[in-house]
Length: 267
Image (cartoon, rainbow, N blue to C red; front, side):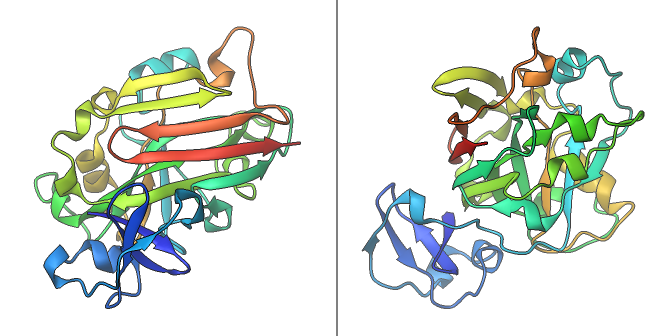
């Protein structure tokens, strides 16, 4: 299933133009944990993707992983992590899939990512059991102010990635049964229709099951938690010369079978 949030309530996506309100769930995660026959659905409605809100309104925790693609670690000249290189993002930075962001500074960068949505709480979850704790997947954009991120040595990540609207997610949650092979889905970023990032998800160093196992060995994962799983190479900071988002740019972030984000940038 593909489940969005429309006018504050879960909404079953049928196709790009049609969907049905879900009447017996008050959250996207709750709906994702049910089978489609268990859902009480309203009549079919026409809608526009631009009207969808962020699927997860207020997660308990937002975990994020840096340097989780081999080529991205190389482009920013950092050693490969032995365990997931983890930071947090703040929920006040979340926004929906069609949005406008105001640059905080001149070195605002793009990072398109797979976002894992936790469906079932737990501690010490094995990699074999991790799939039972995943409600679904979304596209996420981990916008990053590199001046704030790298103001000190060592760098700090959380604040530079948590300005208002710096964490678009969506456009809907896709349940795992919709994806035949997650690793072969392709992540892409386009700035003004020019491709700047492309990679298959199988290029991750730590896949979703490994991340859930690692995080749950330290903290209790809660239903609705978000895990930003890292970005591939092609970021602005890794280019020579460096390249960043400018006033008037349009950023498109997409993953095959998971949808796309559309982000307009203003100064």
